[in-house]
Amino acid sequence: MLLRKRFDQKIVEIIKNKGVGVLPTDTIYGLVGSALSKKVVKRIYQLRKRRLSKPMIILIGSEDDLKIFRIKINKKIKEILKNFWPGKVSIILPCPHKKFFYLHRGTKTLAFRLPKNKKLINFLKKTGPLVAPSANLEGKKPAETIKEAKKYFGEKIDFYLDGGRIKSLPSTLIAIKNDQIIIKR
Image 1 (cartoon, rainbow, N blue to C red):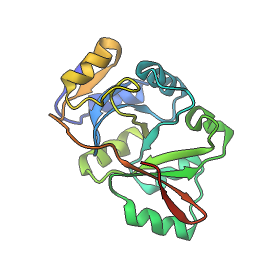
Image 2 (cartoon, rainbow, N blue to C red):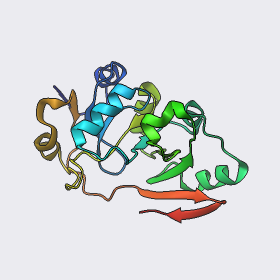
Image 3 (cartoon, rainbow, N blue to C red):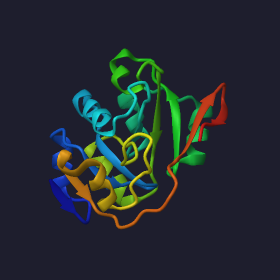
C-alpha cells in the first residue's frame, strides 16, 4: 500500500495496472479505479459493499472521453454540458451499449463528471476515465480524511493520496430527459 501527498506517475502506473485507491476528487474523497476494467469495477463494488444495481459516477478528463463510452451528444445536451462542466455536477447520460453493462448495471445510463480541479484533470488525462464513488462503505459517512478512509479499506487497496481534510458535499447529480434537467441529488 502506497501513501502519497500529490498526484504522481507512480499512482498513474498503479491505476493503469488495474489498481484501486483513495484520492481527493473535486468534491470528496473517492475510491477510484479504471472505468474501462470490469475487474477493477467489480473490486470496487466488493470493497464498498455497494449494491450491484447502483451504478457509479465516472470522472473524465475531457468531454471527448464520452466517445469512449459511445455517448452521443446532440446540440441541446452539448449546451447543457457547457453550463455545468467543468464543475461539481455529475450528469447522467444514455449509454445503452451492452459492452458497458458492468458500469450501467442495466440502467442503460452512466453518470459522468468533468471536474474543475486542474491537477485532477491532468491526472485523468493520464489515467483515463475513473469510477469514483465516495470513499466509504455503502450507507456509511464518506471519509473526510485519509485516516477515516483507512478505517474503511485498510490494506485492501493499493494507494492513498492525502489531500488533507475534505469537508464537502458529494457532486450534484442531474439527468437530462427530453432536453429537460432533472435534479437527482
